[in-house]
Length: 231
Image 1 (cartoon, rainbow, N blue to C red):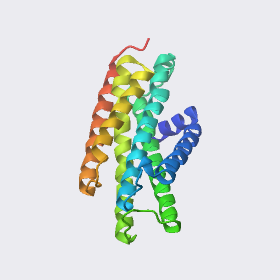
Image 2 (image 1 turned 90 degrees about the horizontal axis):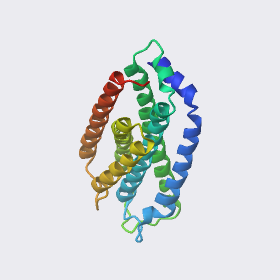
Image 3 (image 1 turned 180 degrees about the vertical axis):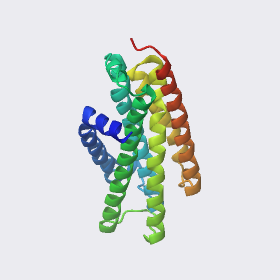
């Protein structure tokens, strides 16, 4: 599997996607720190700020994952190059699983980096120019909790980002892969956009649910690919 991951990395030249991810980090920094997430009254405290950053980072990279899936899986079907890949003496299931694993890892890593980077910029900005309407002291407990939430948000994005694959595989359509990601983003925004941040335990259970859903739908999509004709 590691060799397949390395082959996919070299084949698709993911460095271009990494640069796109860094550009997304810059946009998130401008929106969440410079514009305070569009909140006219600004953030009340660190909890509100971190919750907003986490939600926007997840949303951004769920769509990012759908674009990756469309590029590394669906485009191969549309361009009729998937048959060459399936000519290798390796099961289709394993070949496609390597692609999905790479997309999930990239989504997890980029969400982790984006969340941590934007949070760090916010901490620096708030230290230099305090602006919270209900300021609170920054403690180790707050930082430890935020570190845990960042990991949970990254896992959530990785699981949610795999969900659009099944719809994309049904029609072999780029649009059918990317459009559902916006639905999942809107759904997650309704869950995470609240006056107060969700308890960490609740977010952890939600992350496990998204990961399980992503794994199940991905497995169904791979089983379909294992059986169908690509000629």
